[in-house]
Length: 135
Image (cartoon, rainbow, N blue to C red):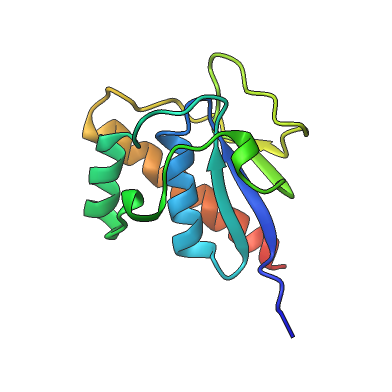
């Protein structure tokens, strides 16, 4: 018998290189037994934001570059739940309405303190989502 791995949750950003990648990594780290985490965007970057990669290694021991890469929306399974990270320039259309918008500012180019604040906010949101989907 195959057990269901829960709902598919997609974290969506325009470039899929920073906030959505952090959310995918923390989703897998904290809630892998409750839901499947994916991230995607309407554009890709050649690599994940290097400040995000460095800080996720430092804070959680997670190497995002080991199993993650920048992906387009059509490259992931159709999500049961779609979460916008907070697109200041307009959220990409993903073929379904967003279930939530976390409205997180992009920390790219900002200080480590700003990055750590955004990572911490994503962590809280992941844990809240895990709790909600565990019920």
